[in-house]
Length: 206
Figure 1 (cartoon, helix red, strand yellow):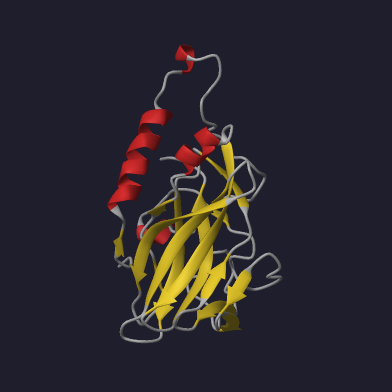
Figure 2: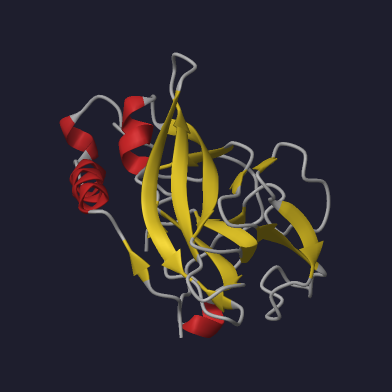
């Protein structure tokens, strides 16, 4: 069973705006307000098909925690450890995951998103009874600043499980930045330690 997820009401409002933008007829404007195609050449797979999710996803850079973690920012006890989710979601069984001590934060490298990248999913498990992971999407704007938007708090179980899809609000950011945006994913352990693995973004609005 997927892990439970609470989503802030403000994000639901953003998602509604995004949905409204996405259905603007092309004929009503000289050019599309937002881009809906893939914005890079990353490989696309269906890693959550076993849980009824046939959407295609791309792996966040370094999101399997098996190789080079350059571009990831780890603090307050976040580190790679032995042990991986057992479902081979990337196509092969891994040997590593990311450990988040209580209060630790990990931020992924920036990656391209647009209106076609509406959700993200990952695998996780807790290392304590009260462990949770706050997930935020960090947007880079045209002026060089950043904006972190919380998209949910994942309540993890003691065994590896996939999260439910979490909205990235990429359509809104894409509309404000010429159709595409650069985003990073930030994970913060609260209430106890946790592990995460195989972080994906969905590049198709199904």
